[in-house]
Length: 263
Length: 155
Image (tube, rainbow over all chains, first blue to last red; front, side, top):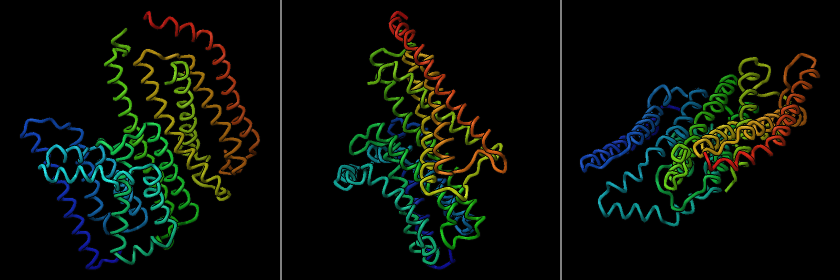
């Protein structure tokens, strides 16, 4: 990305947003603890991992050295790892428990609003996630973004938000506008992960995106995306099933059907 | 809700498919380097099939293991049916990979610069043998499984 005034201003703005988000989370946890409420440590750890991944994308070498393998690592952190970690940190639950009454009511209205309901359906989640990536990597959009820092920042934000939507839909620890069955979650995960793998292979096979560097760089980048994406998708699958396992376990426990209890 | 009989079989099939996919990826792709990440003759349909089968393969392991853990905590595991499912899943995946992906889609071959026939025969016949073992275990398991399911409440 050419080092321009607009580019660094945008980076500074994103860094500021990140800092605000992280301090809001820490502030929320501190408020709960002052009140004597418990907040699971694993949520705080997940938040730290998520904000950490985002911070890494804003500083060198990932923010500046834009060879294609670097871009691939940055993409994995920004659009896959950070959203998953943040979804596991339950920030919306934290906000609902700590906000003052008025902002809390606005947040609740947003969560139950028509837009949230429309966006959290399987076809929309998949189209925004996979569709955006296919358009970015297989068309000249990729090289256009490297000419225009504004477009690049907008696309980064889109990738991050689409990743968040997918992670929240599949594994978010916050309540959803309407419940999604484990079967549907697994199907959506299968389709999303399959398209990730297909996209990485297409990039490798066709030498895409255009003008992104030497063919060696493209091949290394595509393999980073393929195997790195797999790792994040494994964690996603484990997160989906862990909540099913815990839910079923609580039901069995109530009915006294656990083997070690009855045996 | 699935009966314990079916859940044991399902868990086995999923783990079997996953193990086949995992062995293919680690042994033949990463360790031996006989298979290639991409082969120039791969068709578009081959890439689609490969992408979704790769994703499906490891997803199967994760789901299969969680199902198995669930069976265990309920005390419902029917060991022979899990094994039957495992062989069926492994064998079917092996044959699908060997016949459809390698031959029809031309994804990649088992090995390059060698006479392929013995490799293809071993690959597909071992898969077929896996399916056969799975079916036999299933048939034998049916009788004893119903018996042990009836005894279960006394435990």
